[in-house]
Length: 97
View 1 (cartoon, rainbow, N blue to C red):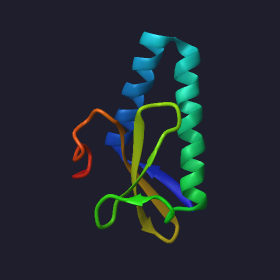
View 2: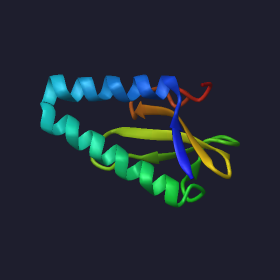
View 3: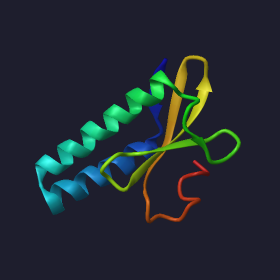
View 4: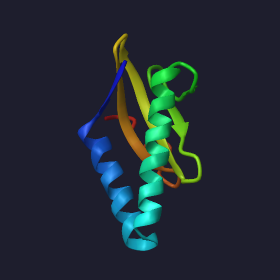
């Protein structure tokens, strides 16, 4: 299986990294990237084990960071990451992507 990020999800990640780099420093930004990568690998290993939030979308929280990965199982070979959203966002943020 492979993972694809939507262009909007790529922008979400870039904004989060820029924020952490600017506000907390490069070490925290690097930890954010590392946690994101760990969770994406976990999704790839067990794509159906995370919480369903709509009919075809699932989500998983990032450990130690107030973010959530929203994804869909596109087919037998692909996971599509739709959004990487902050917990304070409206619960519907990114679901229509």
